[in-house]
Length: 284
Length: 265
Image (cartoon, rainbow over all chains, first blue to last red; front, side):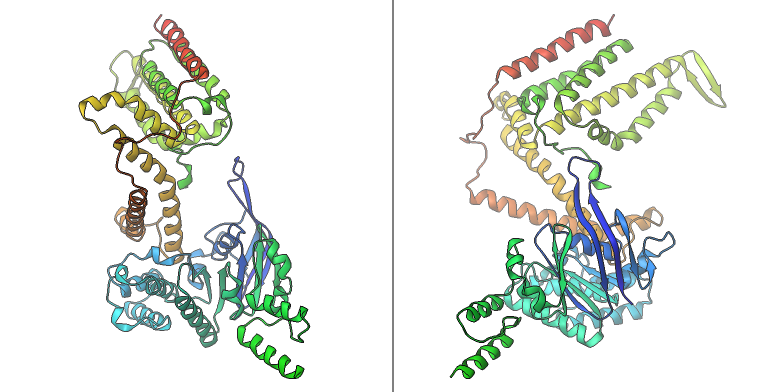
């Protein structure tokens, strides 16, 4: 139950003046149940990479295996793959089209050819999982707030019961409260269902708290692929490619330089606070 | 797939043709198209193709881009050729079943095909070497005399430039929404006509909504910058003819003279 990318290359606009090498020899293994953050600057190829995972874009060269099967085989059922690897695009609320929220969420499972009852059951379940209040289920999706629309759109993909859920910048354009709520719910979803989740973002702050592993993309290549603590240790290199470690990392490094005995690899505010208190007590 | 449409797609490079005043290019293209319908023999088309070839060479746009625009009219081209081939009365050449190819039909079909191909490539040269903004600037200035007849020249030009600007944006948007719906299991490619038309609803509804949203935002942004139509509006870069533009006109005139002289022999 995993996705394996084997030497994947992708070139945009081959043989034209505007040729861009979007992905450069990507090799990755994504095991079941992991919560992964994919970080990269705009144009680093992270969105392109995600669209490879469910076969929306075909690699120029290389292979992708899902559960041991090559998705580029002639007889491979891409439609089935897309139900197993759910992809939530950037600003997913722009894809809503139905008269009411509930029917919109039904669109995905309906396309899988399921029975009406099962479709509705899944839609209901998905909407509950994203925490949308029930009195909104039969309203027009266009009357909801930005954050609510986004939940509906995420539910639309969740209702297909994917094994892997990929979210491309799910918090873009949301206020801090909306952001924390959505990320919290995604984390909860992962712990409850054991689903593999890939979270694409350009903000370390977003992912640091939640993920088990961070993949840093730069100019179409994988720059770092490790647990958050180890990735953030490279905070100086990250800055050079236009990214930044969480603010906590900087504070801890600054304190350490001033002679306070703290661990520099704290990734969350709680962890850092505990560590600082401990260090100060030790000093006194 | 959707990216193959060349209309309104500018090819960025440095060349004499790119630098020409848009009025020269507009006028030249118009005269060129009209000239295609004046020729009486094939020699005229040779001259026209030669002229076009020189312009393409000067423009430094790869020939591939011109041909790409042809893909969209291939159906139209086929229909024109077939209809002219079989439905022109005259001396029969070959006769199969009820279909007859006449000598006149053959001639007409070839002429029409050549005309269409030259016409499309000729106008793509203009759109490929002129930014949409420049193009509408040129149109606005050329059509200024129509103001006497109360034609809202500036408004029409503005509408055109906005429409042209939005073509690539909306294409990109279509591509994005299409992908998002395919990721949710939508199927745009199989089934009969009715099924396919129905499958377009999840694409068209979000597309229209996004187009309206963009239009709204743009209108707001324009008003916020005090846009209120063409009255008293000046240009940052007014169009002024330079030496090369007169040379350009001269080149077109030479082509016309030679073409009509040779083509109407």
